[in-house]
Length: 358
Length: 258
Image 1: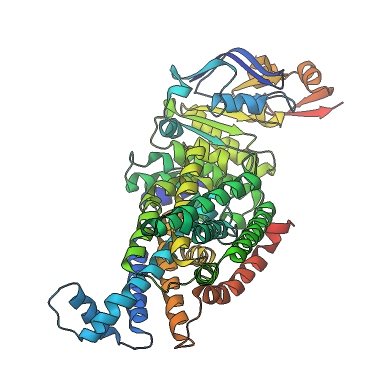
Image 2 (image 1 turned 180 degrees about the vertical axis):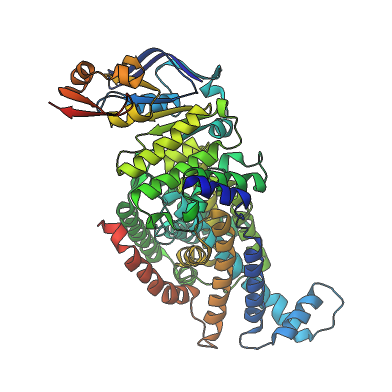
């Protein structure tokens, strides 16, 4: 039996699944979403005029309605890019953490990583006025968010891992604990805050892309670039880790180095994202899961695809947040929770057998 | 060829492995047998370079294991454990593809594709290539994992390759257990160093060319399985008096408690 099978398939080597065409298609989809989202809002601009306004503002010598150009380049583009960048980071961070924990339920929001970042950011808002000169305020907020996110990531990983195995229930419970502690800390800070700070804090706890400008975008890019660029370095290790730590080790992967790298990059990226837009849940769980449903769990696909999908999802969610109740604006965290909550519930029901054993 | 010299491993003050000198080469399947807690898994982890012993040295073709780079070591030494739980669902082909991770930068994707197809055919799972591993029976899944380690060693000359099977057949039915050992023995006879930890002595006699009996962390017998695994030794080491029943020839034996 095996003899004939060997002949048959040695003659026609299996085609190695290549993910490039599907990633290109996803990138095109993202571009389309961005154009539509940039065009929608209080002043609706059809896609054709969006494209010519974009071309005009980059100095391509295309003539466009100056009002379109102003609306787009000053307001909509930075905001939509911010949503896309934060979405990409959350999607990629979700895929990374899930690969590291070997479980699809891990997510920066659920594990309290985002909340830890928010505590850091809020602390700087409340106490920073006395400590940090105004010119460095935004950087200090981003740094504090990073440190908060890093602390929680490291603690959850420590608590939920025993002898190299991740205890899923413990991991999720640790996430509940850190989310509760973080909201208590945020509550205490709110108590100490004045009215102006209060408005800023509200924005952090619900998440919003409003107020995005090119400076903020720069800071976020700086914090998130390492994860986006180092994605390639994480892929082989995360793939090997599907087999478990022991076997990943026999495949030549240095587990400790992989963990350290992943944890620091995720904390930096999520910290940067939280500093800019507050805590936004569920993107990190929905995006990687959709990608795995579409083409399997190979991280060569899941990692870049989660970034692209997360970007498209959050850009679309921001568009919905701006337009659903126009002229009023919904916090984006509410939109993602409304969409992501039921999705997570569905995922939980599917995983129920695995979580609580047979 | 793996050589171990002066190996000592201690756990909480107890010596769990104490081996003076041991050399295992290719040309035939080497079976590692012994009662539970004899130190078989520890020895396997030391030989694979996974566990650094408290004292002693392990050499692979004369080169110290610890001095070989992680990826280079992974290209010539693969380990198949008793059971593997996948963190995410994979198809058989994707699983086998994981064996190619250490070859990144050393093989073209065409080499990889041929290695994956060849390994699946060798392990008899080519017809399952597109199936998700968690939908397979335990035996089929273990054969898929076997294909993964075979793919990992593809590209390394047989005589330099080391395949370590740590209780690969413990939860398998008769058909799959024999299928896995048939593949392992064939690899060994083609020149690779293949070491299988086995609990079923009949399997060791049937497929092994050499049996190393481990008890309380030391080697107490080493040789042709049918010669080494006598009633007296088995009774003494396993603490259970047995009768050895022979079949057609010296590779067919059953051990039954008296």
